[in-house]
Amino acid sequence: MLRHVNNTPKPVKDAYLFPLDIEPTTIIEAMSLIVENAQNTGLTQNLYFYLEKPIRYLCERLQINEVQAVLLSVVTEIGTDRDFSLTDISRFFNCTNLKAVSLVKELEDLAQKKLVEVEKPFRSDCSSYRLPWGAVVAYSNNQVYIPKAQRCEDCEELLQTVESYSFQHENGSLTCREFQDRMLSLLRDNAHLDFVKTLENYHLETNDTALVVYACVLLCCQGNSTFVEYDFFHMVDRRYLHKTWKDFQSDNHKLLDLGLVEPVCDNGIEDQDTFTLTQKAKDELLAGVKLKEDKRIKGMRGLIQPTNIVPKNMFYNEAEKVQLKRLEGLLMQDRYLEICARLKDSGMRTGFACLFYGAPGTGKTETVMQLARATGRSIFQVNMANIRDKWVGESEKNVKAIFGQYQNAVRNSSVAPILLLNEADALLGGRFTEVNRSVERMENTMQNIILEEMEKLNGILIATTNLTCNLDGAFERRFLFKVEFHAPEASVRKDIWRTMIPQLDDDTAIQLAMRYDLSGGQIENIARKSQIESILEGTTPDFEMLCTFCDEESLSKPKNTIIGFKNHS
Image 1: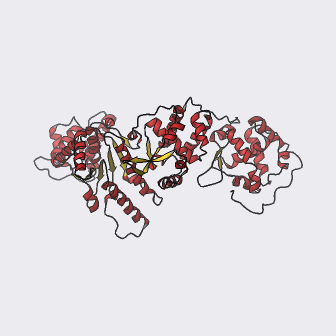
Image 2: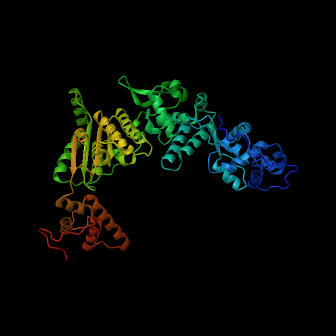
């Protein structure tokens, strides 16, 4: 029901006795005359008599009726930069909500003509409206707004178009609301397609429609037959999404009742986090559509394919080199499958959890990349610092969704990808023993979720962190392999200098390596500065310039004495 604004409307303007004697010459002028004289009139019939000339002008220019001319003028005034409702309209006219309800048919007709857009929000019985921005631009230029219909030849083209909208949304070109608006407009423009006709017969609200359509996009365009909550975080209202997944898990949702969505079963056990379109949905919605081979891994966000990883020379101290070479051998596909099979036969967990820890710039993340490239594995990269959400419970759900999506990828891939938890410093620290704040409770809950997921891990997890002094004991036990990345030794630093700046001779490289205790990442920064200097000045930086770069990079003074070498002068 509409929310009642007040029981006693304010006094309305006096009745108009004579028509307004102004002949408008533009759309905006006509709308302005209507808006200026219609406010607080109670929407009386005298209004149409008084504003006969601007109303007639709009009727003729826009091919609408008198009531729609007044209504469109008002919604252009109140809805240019925000959504509006019938309550907003009743407030403008200073009339009862019941009188505003009489305008619903006219609003729906304007929506059919695409002069306004309508949506039924989540958890609300009232429709909200908005004015297309294209209409605002057209009216400001004294032009008739003609929405462009986007006709698709078939269902495949429609779903590909929706996928292009999702890409625009992911790169920030479209908001969630704009994504949904474009999708709904596309469906209206293609009402002739069997896909759209079938979808309309389900009588779904906007968010449910978006979920079903995007699930079809994942299946038909990306080959992903299953989906988790995380897949839709940026496509639909978050409150709706969390409630929907909760309803899915309790077997209480319209999409389940209609037989369109069902949980994924793994060895007869339902996965409460992962769902799929039913065969009924595929038969009714996607009849005749050629479905891609199911490759769930291709559609995952943050996924890096091994063929897209650029080969890079890595330099390690001897201890790290031995450990990493062994780990690479274990992750080669044939060897990995053999080890997993033997562990399973012995009743042991098959998950490989690895911890790469050490100072910044020592190559932890790049090592994961090169391991993935060498072993032919994709990487599902997650920056743990970016999963926190300001809303209570959101961060925990994000963590759960990430692991659910990864495990789903493992099930649907012939070669298990690597789950990279990058910059996992805070989440691997000691848990709070005395929880007094919501933030502390959130951190503990997130850590407990990660510990639980690591315990039942099926696949390969590698976490990187710069901090290890406060590593929680429970985490330490769950990491099968732990590799500490030390700062490179002098001999290794010399090799890094020669690789990064090939024109350096051995003597200069050795002096820089002995004089400055820099990480590989810092030396790479200096190499880039050297290249930039060469481009700008046309000369190669000399030893003194390189020393200056080193001083700036290390933020500390060089050593006073160098064993085995004379100070360069």
